[in-house]
Length: 284
Image (cartoon, rainbow, N blue to C red; front, side, top):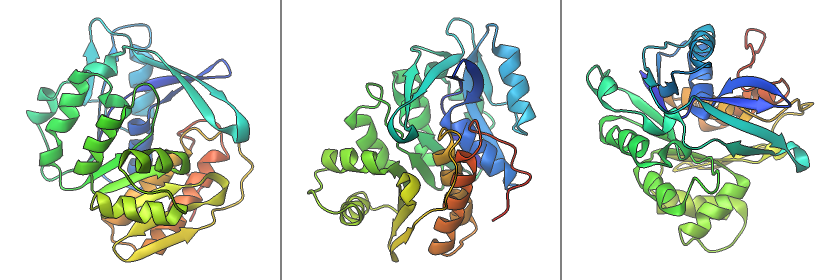
């Protein structure tokens, strides 16, 4: 069982509403691999409630772990795009996913399980406590840094790095997190290696947009230049990459294969609108 916990949001892109949130996106791709997945999140009792549940079910994900909040609204994020199609996010706060409770899951928790989590859902204390209450119970902790200032401060990131086994971040995030970790300036691969050693990680993945990605592991550094793609939007491409990396680690694939497969799926998603496009036609 893989448990993905955190934000469930409606991304507003060019006036269109698309259901998203990194944990949901990762869960979708993991589920499409045939893995058993549980999504834990929280939505409001508002005009988006039924629509959200229908969309989650339509993605093939179970809705039993989706909590309801009587006061806070369902999450919304306005997404815009800048240089090189890099997205920026205007995130509504607070939202229902800021108040995720542990008890519904802990009362019926699967054993064993792996945990997928991020930084953003830890922005306020209730959800942060819930996420951290699961750290000691999970076999492997998969952490996607996803910096979203001002909601992702250094102390939350460093605490999460100390707990994690596998970490994914992009090139800009690597530089910021390396600075926070006291890693000296240097080439990307060198800083990534030192960061991996500093936090004793099983694997550190650094995505580099059109330049592909690299993995740092105890077996060495692996690089892949990526795949050419006509970008539709980049929202969710990193989540597809991370889910594929997780699938590879769980199935003990060789590191170069893990990286190539993750890059290929991430590129495929970047070439299609939205974070959870149909994947029936995708092949490795």
